[in-house]
Image (cartoon, rainbow, N blue to C red; front, side, top):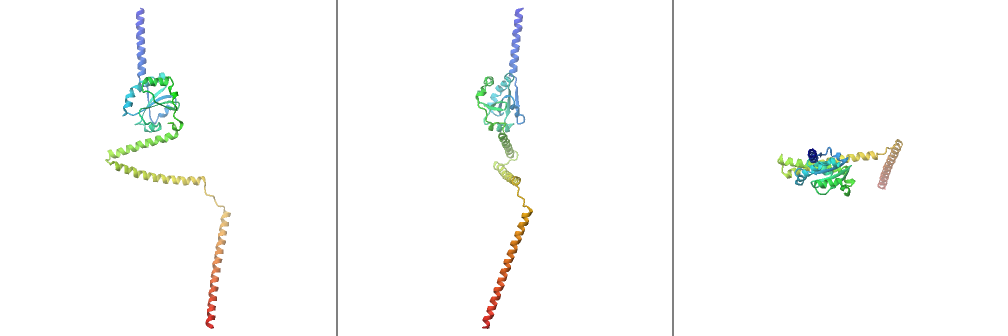
Length: 261
């Protein structure tokens, strides 16, 4: 009887260990992109940036999925970002090599640079090894305004690359032809933006320092002063004319007197 109980207990323990192993092996990965990436700003996360064509990313994929199976035990969330589908995030996080792993705790970012093994990932969380890493400074933080602008530039570069590839592959344009189109478009857009910004600057200056209105009394005085100036100028002209006439008459009289002599 005791032997039967021992066999049942042993079978139960084996079954329990298998279930625990299977639950740990089951992937708990969160797929993050440009639409839901801000989910990592709350709670504790480990996030991998990868690309499907990257050999190192392919080699680490099974390890990362196995590590995600321990996320509930570690009380964290494990995510992945495909940089080919979310180029803006690669710019926001300044990802220059693949795979790149970040530890995120309540919006504070640290880059993981340890071994790419499951046990290393687990000990990094369990033993709070992330505390020994300096967080990314605020001005470079992925959640900052300036890094948002960088992400838009990365998305624009990917869009321009796609247009360049399509012009060459679908329309058969040579490389120099595609570059010529981009150059003309750049000049046109630059001129348009320059005109727009100049108008905005003029309007802004007018709003900040509008021209002063001239009071009616000052306007009347200026008109009177102008009228008096005009009258004085007319008087001077008349005087000049009178002087010239008198000079001419005197000259004529002198000539007549000489002829008489």
